Length: 233
Image (cartoon, rainbow, N blue to C red; front, side):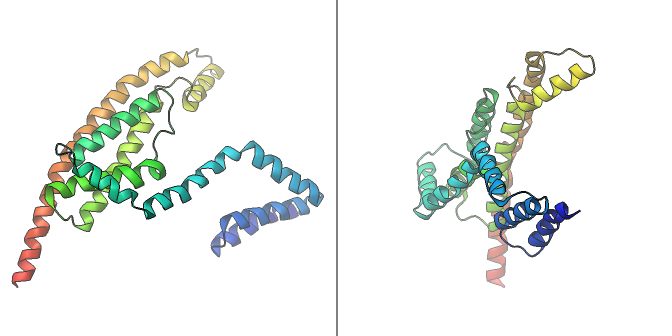
């Protein structure tokens, strides 16, 4: 029973909002000591687990880099850049990102993009900049809507694109499941069946992104009318 003390530490630590890394570390050490493991063996296990899974911590390195770039004007530069492209609209820009994201995921480049690396620092500010070029100052509600659509373009492109990549984990999982139940299916066949779904997802979400342009225009006009009415009153 004492070996379950780690669970209690995690629950209490998260409930009191302590640092998650510290809570998990203390829980691991406590569980090891409760299981009569020598302290040096616990540290050795920690080290081996870190080395085997060190790629998981790489995303932590990207966060301070993105923060520094934002502090020194990455968002502003992205908006200035998009303002020079007169034909750029929010809908067209997000459709282009959706297309690139889906094609990249199709060939296994799932890390080419992402919310932390691309959407927040680049795609969303550029989409906002394109809307500001056409409609002027945007209400906060519209800004948040553009950010949400930018995130959705990333999600849809990745989710339906990676289903076509035959080495994707879900494809291999389905192959193993079918084989265990006596059904022989090749990964290439399953990937081929993912192509119509990916095309349909692109067309449906691309249409939603095109309609976003009208929604932005209508909401900005309503906001301007409301502002002028309140000023007059």
